[in-house]
Length: 230
Image 1 (cartoon, rainbow, N blue to C red):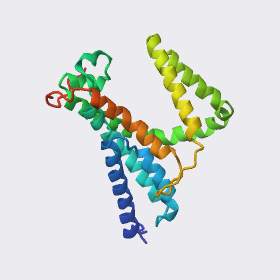
Image 2 (cartoon, rainbow, N blue to C red; image 1 turned 60 degrees about the horizontal axis):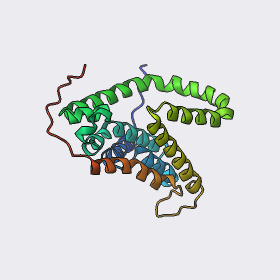
Image 3 (spheres, rainbow, N blue to C red; image 1 turned 30 degrees about the vertical axis):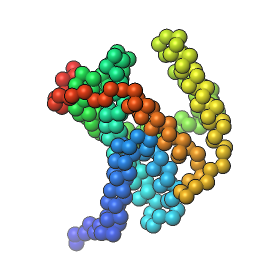
Image 4 (cartoon, helix red, strand yellow; image 1 turned 90 degrees about the vertical axis):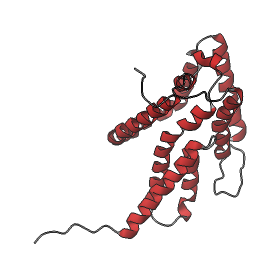
């Protein structure tokens, strides 16, 4: 007697596809709008998970879909709004250098290729890296503060030039004072998230791009999307 494969549940399949579609929609918004981030939506979904119908797996699927979509699209506002003045091309990011040279479409294509390769490599590496971190975290936990302090110091001292090092140290001190002053502050609002990080991250993610857009000269004429970078 031949065994029959279990039939898929149409309702569960539709719910899963709806979760994927919701995640793609949220990731599109966070990727294209400065100030929004996939982590912000993930926090909101996690806070609202208890009131959502269906298994919690669907919430995780929506978070994952939003994160993957965000990685493909977040380069667009960065290239369109954050282009510096051509006189600052020497200190610009590589993607911005391509935009200044009229190769912005190539930069978009390279970013999409990089995001696609990242997804391809992330799938087989997810399980072993998760197992590794589960074993390593108990060993690192007592020394976590020392490790993070060392990384912060390393970021400051590896800046090029005294001026950049002083600026990095001031940024580090300002972020520390911001955390001390706000992390324990009571927050209430219409959304089911009593966490100051949601509005704080929205401002910190969005402000640099918008400030760069104000100071920049806009996007110059662009060539085709042929990849010519060696």
